[in-house]
Amino acid sequence: SRAIARETNQWALGNVKHAKKAKAVFVAEDFETQLAEIKAFQLEILGRLQRSGQTAYYINYDDIRDIEVVNGLARFLGEDTVLEGHSDKFKKQNPEPLADKVANFAEMAEAVAQITAFDLESAPNFEPRRPAMVPSYLAATQAPLLFLPIPGGPVAELRGWLAALDGVDPDALATGMNQKALRRWKRERPGHRSFTVLRHPVARAHAGFCRLLLNDGPGAHPEIRKVLIDHYGVPLPETAVPDADWDRDAHRAAFLGFLEVVRKTLAGQTALRVVGAWATQAQVIAGFSPVIQPDHLLREAQLARGLARLGEEVGCAAPTAPVSEPDRPFALGDIYDAAVEAAVRAAYQRDYMQFGFDDWTPGA
Image 1 (cartoon, rainbow, N blue to C red):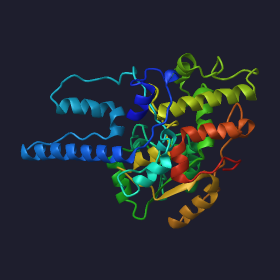
Image 2 (cartoon, rainbow, N blue to C red):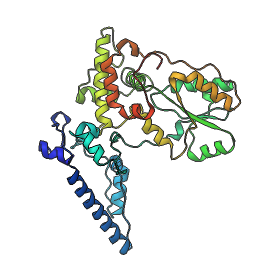
Image 3 (cartoon, rainbow, N blue to C red):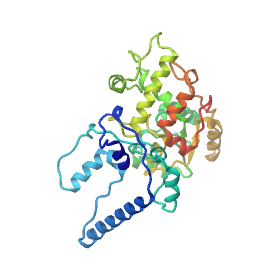
Image 4 (cartoon, one colour):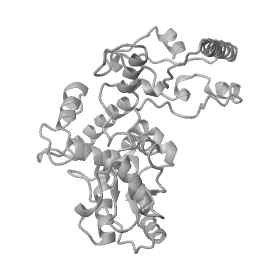
């Protein structure tokens, strides 16, 4: 990033529209020298802390976006002032993967192949960490099954399936638990199984787009909709529920505009908060892990097979797997093309890499 800044002479970014792009050239000798200097400096700090009986306050790069962590650092330093939020004056520069930022990436990869501390193939992650969201978990009334919902996925459909499993109304399912209640639920049900359901990133992004921005019912976000129109130029309709003039071309254009904002938001280049339905599925699942690790990651495309196997594990006859209703006002198949796929891949590269998703097809 410093090499790119020297090349472009852009050392701070206030508006992503003014971002200057360039590629850095990797020089192995310079890298080795800088790495040695950094390691020596870190060891010097560590030694001084140890000899003086002090400790350090460690912050990972990803933690900087968590305002509570920043306020924790202030308290550690004896400062009583509490920040309400981050300044939106500066935007993240160069959030792209290394392969897109280094002119001689192959040479760089070969030069540092023996240095395991550098994961050159992984995409940078500026996405804020997600909470475990324990109150959102859904537990069957009789069967020892626990569903961990991923926002933007087939949550309502799985809620109905869990209720049908025990022959009860969906409102009878256990939810709203805290961590203490969750631990009690697990202790009382030996052999319990927990699961979550992955949805193809294109289908999930489009479902979230329709539910959050083209809807005036549950799940709608009118305040975010207004910001997207006023500050980011997303061509959304004037009313939350589009009128008859809203055609497929308009829908597709708005969806592509939305995806560009999501891409920049996940890269730390906007001041928008990451709504649960926008977050990567990888980050949502990582948020579960401090509290619970799902026993099964089922895929929506093979949901019938996955739920049947899950029922067998806990000794229950699984009801018919749910099928999601088409999105409104247009189904994904009405507007999907290569440009849509490319835009989703740009925003959700981490999910494609982590879970091996291919291009979207009906039923994927």
